[in-house]
Image (cartoon, rainbow, N blue to C red; front, side):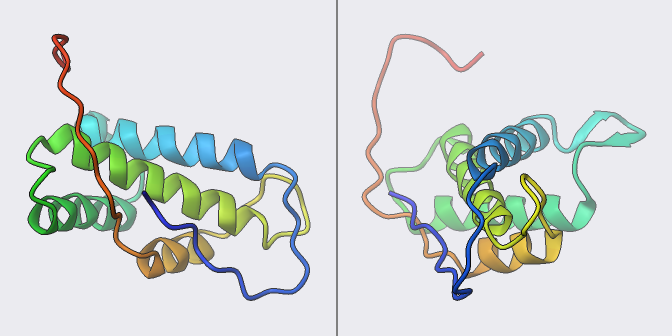
Length: 126
């Protein structure tokens, strides 16, 4: 379970927030899985964002005994980042627009995930 960031602004603009969640989640997941580079010269996300995502992965693994697989921790961090993107999108009057400062503030202020359940399957991650 990942908490949704609290938005203190009275007027919210939710159109496009779902798109922002999807885009933020996929960008973060892709960045984490590929160590933030399509190749040596092309970063997927800024170094600042990648470091915050990596820190979230490490924190999740250290604080949750059930998360021994790095890929699970990466999924949790990526989805948390996506939720921050969607929440940040609600603060902007224009649809599907985010301010990265809002995203990072919301991502950093989100509660740590709780009630993590793991499922064992016969399929590998590769």
